[in-house]
Image (tube, rainbow, N blue to C red; front, top):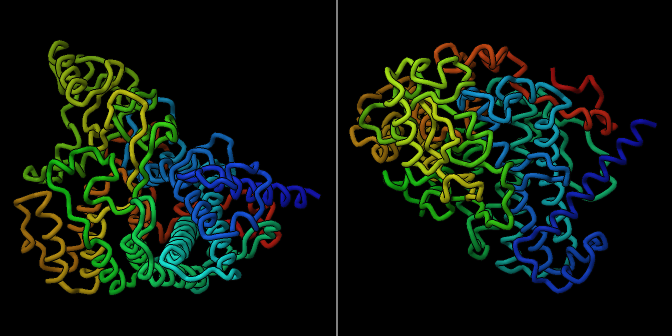
Length: 544
């Protein structure tokens, strides 16, 4: 009886998210969808014509950043997931209590718990994308729509979204492709139908899931080659599809495909100059932004927004009382000629009396300052320069990489999901792994010279030295953008916060974690709701 009830609950969840995808399109001008109550819209009406299908697809664009997928107020868009993955990997470090957002993630108490919010949200948000993408693909397949550039665009994006969703699922809820046995390791259920009843499916192998992912992203690229130009950067363009393909290939060690796809993806998206790099990463209009959501005031998720979790000057209690810092060792390894040193403030005064390191609140407690006047003046200068409020605390090595366009408020800013800088780094890594030393040097130089005019590619003449430099560049360049968790799995690297600036008292077991190949705790637990409601899964199918 319990399973039947939970199965009904699961079906209800999927029906609700389908409704929400129709509720929140970017354009609500369609007369029919405005005139008919949302709960009365049938699949037949939603997929009756190409324009209506485009509105369903627009719902997915919005779901990339919304804060409440099922209407319950829980944070579960990329605005939450991207910083959460960097907290889990230990690259973005908490310094004070704030409102305790993401402390569970940082302490490894969330993704290791089958009943946690993040495991539930990560799982069901991705399957929401799978469900709606499949509905679009399958309904178009059974229709008599005339092939047009617009229809190709819809199909291309739907296949790309499904590939992206399964890629995100299999790389968090299963062992890494490069460190496991993909032909036998349990992956995630492959469900390619849509709508109720959703009876679930058994866990496919990691290799089988990757086969579906690659089929979808290759199909997406072929459709998008024949598609109309994307309306804005929230849509998945041909460049973005190549970028997704590059990420997929990198995660499984298909180095040749990763390199070629990344090179294609970055075309037309020039690297930032110094001024652009320090503009705040807050606008879709920045030249490196390949895939991003433009967030308007009426669609803001305010205290579940990306900048609430990661920015210094956002006016929320989490930001005012919990500066996010870079790993001290990493920062100190950045050359003085690299302009990215300005993205963190190593000498900021520790003004938080509740700081985890016990050195906050006054010049007497802060070893970097000898007198209170200098201490307070340093804080005032930072507040004035970056537009925070007087209630905001500061902390050594605090991040000012992410700036609000309207600092000191809780107004929304755009969220960037993919930048061309990442594509340069993927191409460089893939070529290094192919032992193409010259090719990797040249790509790395083309990127790094824009960050550090003194960069010298001839210092890196072996695969090992190139890989160490590429890892360094990814950690600095992509800090706070959600890549560290999957990078550590791909590189099979553990966590050691001993000299990072993190507090052992706060981080607990997460302070030191063994590398992923020997540590099953890196893998997210499957949500307990899925175990209970999917008739093909039992506790024996749960991740260890």
